[in-house]
Length: 254
Ligand SMILES: Nc1ncnc2c1ncn2[C@@H]1O[C@H](COP(=O)(O)OP(=O)(O)OP(=O)(O)O)[C@@H](O)[C@H]1O
Image (cartoon, rainbow, N blue to C red; front, side, top):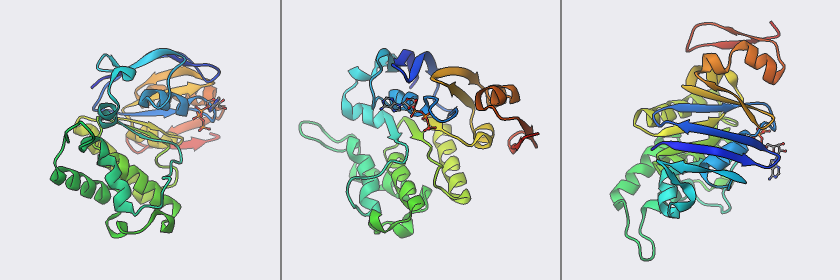
């Protein structure tokens, strides 16, 4: 499913921009604070309507896709997102299956077995099997973030759109998440992540979109979109890429 944005804009937040996003890739959105990254992600996820332009899935405007179908296609994790209720981890993650289950006047799209399997896989991917019966209020910040991510993964959406999903994860769980997202992309999903860590974007993304002051200023493979000149211009930091392709580190002030 191709995700497109045609001349989308948000007054005072995002200048008009157009994008064609192909599934099967991990796409990073990078940029300084206030650049418009979360605004763009929320437009792509359809949780916020654009002031101008439209977002479409395979040519159909998001606004024309029924809500449950849209929820099966687009999994969205808001920045620092939390749950309103103090559920147990497993119950929270199972909420990711809601769009697949029977609703008034609508038949289920998946079986109970498929739902259970998807929940199990998501719990395992986020290393939550031992915490499955723990209420959210008795988790650490990073564990809660992993539970919120597992809910999105359990929905097996065609697109995973996550705003700073690595922000509170330790090194091992962060790399575990990146591996799970790469696996989802290899299986045909599209992945869009807001990332502040440019080295993670350089090493793990197939394509990077760089926003600055509400404008798309670079779009391409990481070595192009995150070239040293772009980093200097956008982040106003002198930096140099060190190391081998795939394991690059950013040397600052060089
Ligand atoms: N609900 C809102 N209404 C109006 N302006 C907003 C709203 N939310 C954010 N903004 C403004 O829009 C601009 C872009 O915000 P956005 O949250 O998209 O940036 P961001 O790149 O995700 O930043 P950060 O890295 O700090 O999370 C900022 O100038 C911000 O102050």
